[in-house]
Length: 283
Image (tube, rainbow, N blue to C red; front, side, top):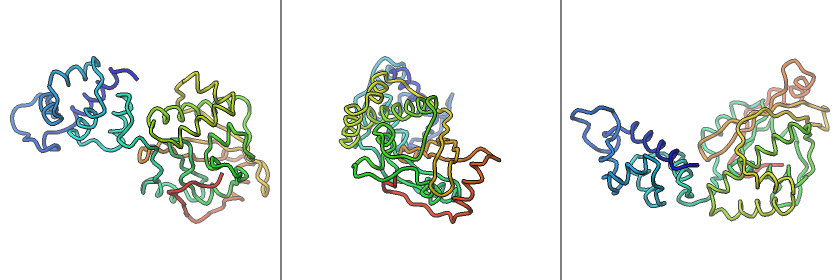
């Protein structure tokens, strides 16, 4: 990520922050509703000239300056972490968040009969609903990474889920890209570092993808689940970003009118909207 992206983000945050939001008088003539550069500089205890160079992409701030700017702008936790990432620094604690927020839990509950799980930035399952648990995607193992989707894919853990070569390639690239972003964003997380070391040491395909360092966006994913009770179910997986906790929701559906859709309904039915969160889930 370049310094110009950081500068653009700073300008965006400054332009949208009203003086009254940070305790400054809002009177007088203004060309824009946001803060003046001099006002933000004073609040963050930096010079206006230094802030100008930051916004022009000519400088990179230290972690201390990033924190001061975030506090001056009253940024949310997610916005602060974004600013840290753009500046090339870890957020204050540098740890992958593992807490499932209230909003994400409500989403799990409202999609009670649609299989859904929540993964943190390191692909650990931290929340799920009963419909997802009913899929029984994988057999449990004794590995400490048993609840980590990246490990289950690249570590060849027992699984009832199968993908064609094309879909497998795309899904593996997605897993690796997000994991690499987390690795850069949370360098103080020892568990994440150990997971990456494990995967790079045991999976040649993961190591190859890791070294290419390509950013992968949203893409189509389809797999076949061989369920012991109802047989094969073709499932589409959609990913939904959950800013609270830097998480991602994985939502599984079957193509409408398909045999798999009937089998999925037979399996999950109209389940009560029960959800579990805040801990690692079954594989």
